[in-house]
Image 1 (cartoon, rainbow, N blue to C red):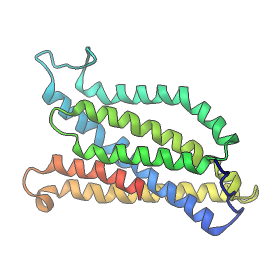
Image 2 (cartoon, rainbow, N blue to C red):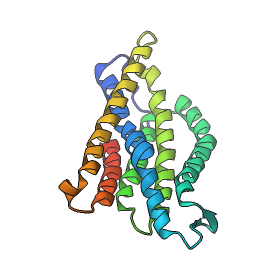
Image 3 (cartoon, rainbow, N blue to C red):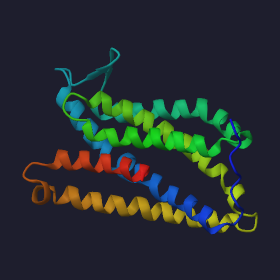
Image 4 (cartoon, one colour):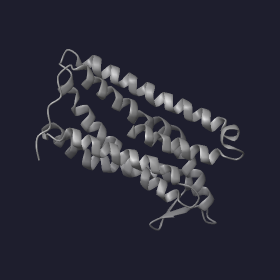
Length: 211
């Protein structure tokens, strides 16, 4: 496989592209991880619980409110196993951009598919979240590996800080739009459409990430 061309140091287009990825990926943290997915999956799981109030994953009883925390723990455990290896690959491989794109697409698609999680598919929401969160962590590894290639040592702190700020702005902007949709869902989408609004919000984070 041919080597990828090295990014140009301190090139405005390269740095802008780096900023825009942070803008895109941060929506996953705000809309999905922080606000909407946890309560939504807990509500679906409660509706599917048995008489004891539990749902079952591979025969293991889980309280509905604990389902997403379990999924977070699984994804973090997988990150602990795989991210060090990916970090080494990011340091020495010439395929950083391809790997970043792979995990960005995988995570973005998994997040977009959260739109279809409803009714008895609460378990699918957990599975998609594990895939998306693992992809999120992996993509960040390769994203950060680009910083020394696009910014000289005297510019890295500034570029890194700007990237964080732009990511915060992007994630916050989509979250604001999603909160508006959820708050006024009855007026925008029709009566009793709160669940649909949540699904749209979750899917929009994936589209934002892919965009």
